[in-house]
Image (cartoon, rainbow, N blue to C red; front, side, top):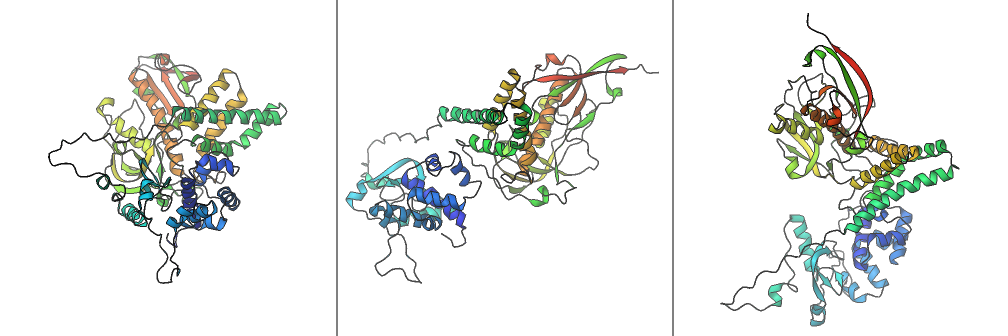
Length: 529
């Protein structure tokens, strides 16, 4: 391991190796050191380990804390010796009798290849992390996932660095185990490739149930501590909305395939504010548009304008393609839909020449290229498609900063809040409804660069979610126009004014998939002189 590797990285690698060596899961370790089930996943990816937690981890594995901090080689050797696994310890590190010299450091000794050990070498259907080098291996030795020799570990490391596939270990190669087939023998059909078992459905249901139970438990505890005082309980839950949002995020990712990266390196020239009073370079396409009466194809008379409100706009916008890790730079056109990527793009949008719908990028004072988030780019491409009447030219992409993305990163987070909100509305539980709104609204407002939330610094997420909310509202306007309604006003994330029978287009109600009538007004269309 390189001397420049940080202590935190060594510690995380040691814990990963010890979990594999002891055949424990992360939730078992979490419970063993007195942390919630999801905490180890978070410490291994998003937040650093605390020193007292490192001491408890070392005590859990019954090794010295300094061995844990020294890296996986030392930690596994210490574990093997402390637990009487001498046969494994000599394969991890076996210095010569004379000891290592300054010129030639000690190397892991190659495991013997006698008949007894060969009998204990098995092949894994799914690659696992080697207990020695923490790289993928398809073999187990004496019951532990690992390469069968130091040379195999070195080959795996070289292959990982070059991106190539490491050569298969000769002790487990099918060619080494089976004699060559006769010259005229009929070839047998190749066995089906082993497939990873899908994640059990009960795990997903359990994650959702844990999220819902967490929210309801907090409301009940706040109300009990406040002695039934609704206002005091509401004030307490409002104060705890941000830490509760982060804890809910951890619970929702307990069975997730992707770790939440809390502090990825992002391009400062785009996301960093030049000053407190000036915004960064991202243009969110916030709509604020009203239609001129002269453009309405209506006969003279008085018309009722229905002012519709979109329920839980930011809650619905949590379902969006969020970038996962460190963004990569590219120039020219990029098909993020096909590549499953998301990020920020410098584009020149097509011209907009329509009076019946607002410009999808909002009102701009200056023409030219601008940085937009993924939802806005996808909206522009949809409007440029023949399906929507080719309302504008596709945006010209000059450069992009994108990473792999998923639409499901906040799915359990969102669905748990949605369920608790729906039940609160049904039971007229204003406390729970207000609590849910505080969590998702403060999550969106503080997950970027806020002094109120240091657990997550993802301005790219905040801009993506906001842009998705604006894009969702624009989609409602587009749907209204396609159904024959007259769109009169579009503003913010939840304000849509129309003339016409909107109940034939949208379901009325307070659910997140419904809309409600907020107010009505009248306009008069005069006859021309």
